[in-house]
Amino acid sequence: MAFETGRSDKREYKLPLPKMIGPAVEFYGFCKQHELRFQRCVECGTWRHIPRDMCAHCGSFKTEWAKSSGRGTLFSWTTIAQPMLPQFAPLVPYAAVIVELEEGPRMVTWLVDVPPDKLELGIPLEVAFDDVTPEVTLPKFRRRSP
Ligand SMILES: [Zn+2]
Image (tube, rainbow, N blue to C red):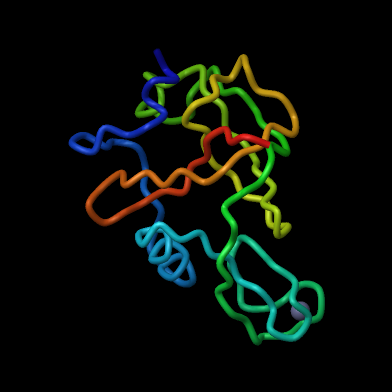
């Protein structure tokens, strides 16, 4: 039951939405166009996520928004049985997952087609954009063929 709500009901989306401040505006702007992009250091080529001003590898402030393949694997997860916010109560149990993209960044996200009891490390995944409101698109993930 909870898993079926992994994809949003666009008419009644009640879960918290990302705050559109700072580099989140750019990140989610690309998501709205169904493009998964991460910051990449212009000096050393290191990809990073969560967006921030400076490269942790070389200290450069020169960055670009590079397009990701949207392909990755399941790096880790936790199954939530006790929701912290009442809006999540209908979803439990659900999994908060960390996907490692082919380019290197890892991100916390949702899976839309793998229930928590079927998760395994290394499952091949691909981005599945979910237009949760007319303004906001969230990058979720689904299983892909290896
Ligand atoms: Zn760098």
